[in-house]
Image 1 (spheres, rainbow, N blue to C red):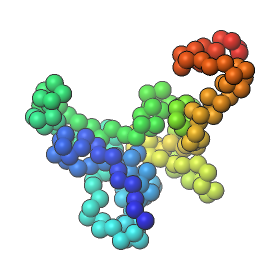
Image 2: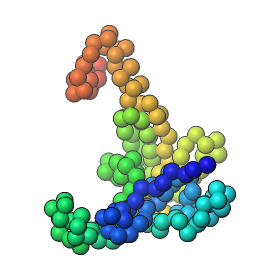
Image 3: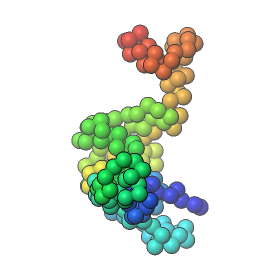
Length: 180
């Protein structure tokens, strides 16, 4: 069974370093979430050479410096430090200041993930929720998601608006002003 390739932290073409971060590495199902390292057991099970796994960084760690060629293409100075970064939804949680436990954030888009930070690793034994390494070492994100969230929101809007079609901006105005 092929595994999803991890996103590259800065990318080999940007920094000369092939690497990933713990939040994207989790999506491959090949990460030992407790240790925040690749699972040799999973690689062996799928007969994937463990030596092909790129190094894993925490999102804040430096993975390299932008090379001259890329820097000139995008108008930046060569040598700018590049950090590993993270998976989109993890960075959105951070950007929404969801840092402490008892805080949650949700994103309405193609999917609707609902996430909350954890101070300890918690695995859902029923596998209904996902646990991701968070931006901070020794913190995790517990996430559940509806994968067709945007479509469901659109259906709900059309249902309650009696079938009227709204432009994207009008939809949110309708939901926040007309209904509340």
